[in-house]
Length: 254
Image (cartoon, rainbow, N blue to C red; front, side):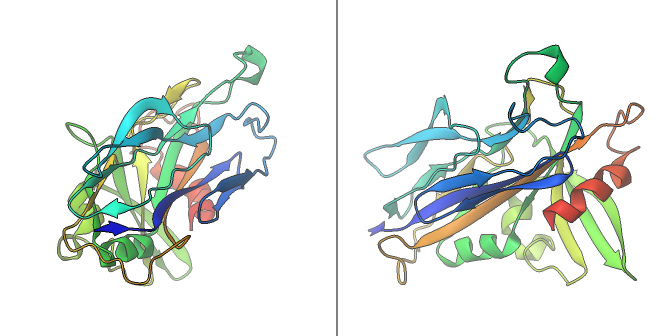
């Protein structure tokens, strides 16, 4: 059985202390940017989200290719087949598109967020995360953000896992209290022309795929947001700078 719907990656990328928002319709994605003068250059596309294009095989699996999408372009998946998988690998790049020293973006930390309610909606239709990396450990740490008495504190937790994204019984991500939220921080800061690893790489389409209520252009979104935060000169590790990084990133992600 196939599912006549699509899963669209909607990337919201925040740069230079202001929000650069990518919005999606059922089959297309557009972007608008608002950039401050804090070192990130809109015209140069200093901070971008990308993923790799795909091909669908005869069994219905969506296999990743070596060809990246255009900056900010999301992908949609149509005619989902029960028991298959979807390669999907959003990642972030800090780049100096013109290779001009005068426009080189600053060294930057990258913080990302996935909406847990959208993950629950995916699961309700029979889709789960199946890989956060192709092999080995993730390069993204979970950050727990707890708000009390109007102030938010930040705690770096373990590396991101598939279980964290999927399993309500093993973590709080999909069943958070009102004052607890989660995001993900890349394990090292980026310099110009560097990229993060993918936040995740694959989703699985369960044998219990639910098609009722989805037809035509109906859209099951999966939104990924990212923020680039300029690294302070003395901030060489996440542990000695997490609060300062998150103080800038949190208002743009939540």
